[in-house]
Length: 420
Ligand SMILES: *[C@@H]1O[C@H](CO)[C@@H](O)[C@H](O)[C@H]1NC(C)=O
Ligand SMILES: *[C@@H]1O[C@H](CO)[C@@H](O)[C@H](O)[C@H]1NC(C)=O
Ligand SMILES: *[C@@H]1O[C@H](CO)[C@@H](O)[C@H](O)[C@H]1NC(C)=O
Ligand SMILES: *[C@@H]1O[C@H](CO)[C@@H](O)[C@H](O)[C@H]1NC(C)=O
Ligand SMILES: *[C@@H]1O[C@H](CO)[C@@H](O)[C@H](O)[C@H]1NC(C)=O
Ligand SMILES: *[C@@H]1O[C@H](CO)[C@@H](O)[C@H](O)[C@H]1NC(C)=O
Ligand SMILES: *[C@@H]1O[C@H](CO)[C@@H](O)[C@H](O)[C@H]1NC(C)=O
Image (cartoon, rainbow, N blue to C red; front, side, top):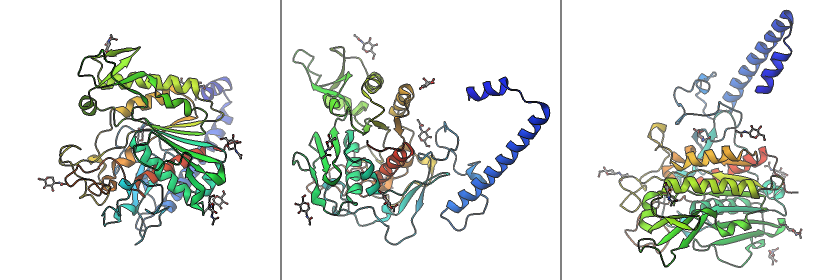
């Protein structure tokens, strides 16, 4: 922008040339405008739409939910709408037979009858999500490492990606956990090898991303756990050098959860009994920014920080009778979306501060907010006691996290990702 302005000032053209150039700009603009309108209309899935949908430009019917920081760009995948797929049986990338799925995410096996929640696809405004091509993704990642680190939402997304990629591998026995560990939510570290591609897709269970430790003996008895806001989890040294790193955290940085666990924050070796969760998170994000800046080799690593995945407990909270099993279709009214979680602002600021094109926001909050229909709800893993709380936080698989991974793939394509 500044460069452009300087140029214009430095080389003021003569009057006639100026008019000529203006005219040319105007014609170009009109041409682009018309082309865009046509392209947008061709791209629309509904037959009944009028030819000229000016609401793409003046989105009165569907205004942005929160102040929209960037104008309509070719591929802002974060903003759009859920479009129904007009098919009896949706084309799935994989099904519940995928061997890498946690029992808790296999909603049909656990009794869910409707498949309505699978009949929606995310349609960004003004562009398309590229079709997910598993063999292309695998080929681009040859000899590489893809790392997911964070809480169980990260595991949800990791399992989704394993199943999406496995579609391109005919002999599933060539995909295995390097240490022979079973996929369970209790494991702290799992690394799946795609033998034919010499690729590992890894998951690190680090709910705070920061160090979570036991209380030192000398601390007051109410302290049960400590989060060290100035240290990244010790496993983070294994993330260095990975080709794709997808980080997420947030669900545990929660006032109620912190209080319930007796969790306090530590900085510089001392526990701060008065530091609240927002301040703790703010300081941790600073740590994350400096870790990323220091340890990232932009030649190798592509880092994505995923923002908050909204939960949908209705008529109560997660531990107080909240439910979501009645929801069988996405929310239609963006006005009913809950406000963004406060964590998001800190995450967005961190990305801005890092200011490196290889570190990006995986902005899924808005699109996810609509999908109250996609949670396991009461169809939890076998053995869950009757009357246990519903799961309105995680996602059925196949299901919503597949879209997060489609967006991840799309962003990697736009970065021309390929291991060397
Ligand atoms: C994330 O996406 C939503 C929807 O497009 C948008 O309103 C929000 O500003 C985005 N957040 C950031 C930090 O870009
Ligand atoms: C997927 O990518 C591979 C290249 O790895 C290509 O040969 C194939 O045509 C692609 N498939 C589709 C459906 O685009
Ligand atoms: C597999 O990838 C690793 C890097 O992750 C590399 O060091 C190793 O040489 C590769 N093995 C083969 C057989 O190409
Ligand atoms: C599938 O892969 C496994 C592990 O590499 C191998 O032992 C087995 O022979 C393969 N099966 C077929 C049909 O190729
Ligand atoms: C504890 O944290 C608060 C902010 O939450 C800060 O104002 C205070 O200075 C900290 N105390 C120490 C001893 O660092
Ligand atoms: C919430 O509670 C109200 C009143 O008890 C009931 O009418 C409604 O169906 C409940 N909603 C859900 C989603 O269970
Ligand atoms: C981001 O980095 C670029 C150079 O890589 C610099 O020109 C720009 O001013 C930086 N922006 C901010 C907000 O720091």
